[in-house]
Length: 317
Image 1: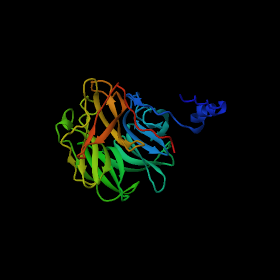
Image 2: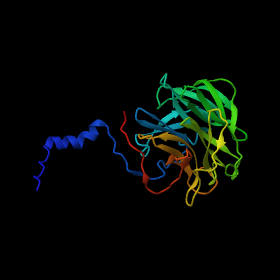
Image 3: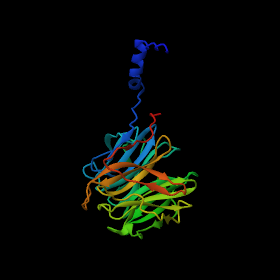
Image 4: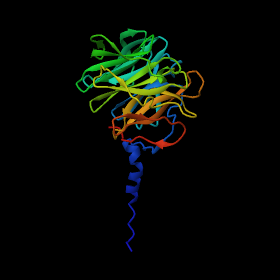
């Protein structure tokens, strides 16, 4: 029989109890359940900076007249923050925030009253000030930086809901002409309105994956697909197994989100779902995994109201 292990001194036991409080560590959730943010929010974009995730979305500011930030250290538990962008105009939609690794500045690519432009701030907490308007009759801007440092702004031209790409000279200046890379053609993109929107680009093994949403965003048939290309300028080819995220019994209109990696490199889809199957704009924020199969095909799923394994956790740097 082994001798009993002597108990730790009282001061040492107390240190272990207090350690999480004094170091700023946060407990890692083992599971989560959608919705992760239940307010009427949509079109989320998430960045990670200094170990903290920052989420920006449509809604929650006098209807849709500004942009609020939410913060998290684990992609599951979110704290509602302040208003970071208030342009003084209505219909503030689908923000995308990007940090310039050279200058350290933060850029918010906005839709305001169907105009796409950029605002700038020193911090992900804002305040963001409008700098430049790029396009009229446009929505859903998203900036992508390639490995060679070149910048590309993806957005949606109206009318027609045509996803387009604009090469950028700097985060605030365009270069060359935009070109259309995708427009509503597939049956699922035209099921309830002819729509392709919400572009988000990721790169894997020198392939570019353009994630986007199709069909009417206020309908339960809103869904997510993707297209691939060898260049950020295209041409893009739709995946044959689209849509990769779609409605199911008790789950309606999943779409328009972003892709972000956790501490172990696993991709996650932060997106919105509709609260019901009516044609209206009542939505909430969700989290579910994205993954690549052995053939490099992107896969996804949507869940609601059931426990799911949580993202890998790491404490803030």
